[in-house]
Length: 289
Image (tube, rainbow, N blue to C red; front, top):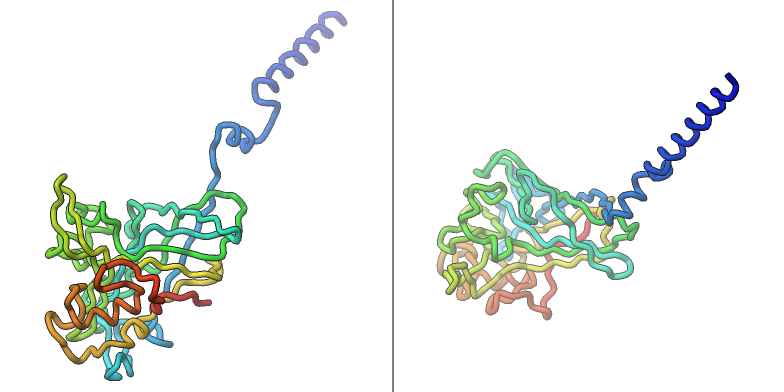
């Protein structure tokens, strides 16, 4: 009886050791993930806000002293696309933000919408003031952010209109077969920034001579405690929104439109080339607590 019991115990011990070996010795899933080359990620949310000078931007508010004519006005629309969002570490390593997919984000592009269809605004009731995504969990400390305003050229065509956030009718720009990258409207004066000089290339792709995509770089930015502020008072500081100097009222991104030069300058863009001008400093985007 004693020998039989000893044999049973020995078999149990051997079986237990074999089980531990087969299961990796009870090691955590993280070591298995590391061995398999799986990279962990952490969620990131970057918040934006819109202002007119020192006042928050809203559809049903009168803003005074706007532009060179110190005009009183309300906003009618304010929406913009952003893409190629990157965080920069304190070691100057650039890390791309992989955007989540939602009604506001797809294929690396996000739509920010600050109008809510009240007051003078005639857009949509829904708003969005943040972008969300992930970065690799490297333990890095981020202290700067970069992004590009607009939609990348390979997506800037109206075949995308069935997919959110490319299906917003008010952001379609039919005469360029693309999209408005920035739409900011006040009564009798509209600002639409988008690629121009667009035509079908040899391979059937749409090609544009003027990109008109502001590239923004902001230092001393903590995405966990701060936000990116967009100041339309700064954007319009050199513009008279009561006077049409030629062509459509406002700026439609035309290279010869006299009302575009000032707003392009505030965005750091060359109106002549449609590219970012290293000799200009954009005044519209800043870091806010």
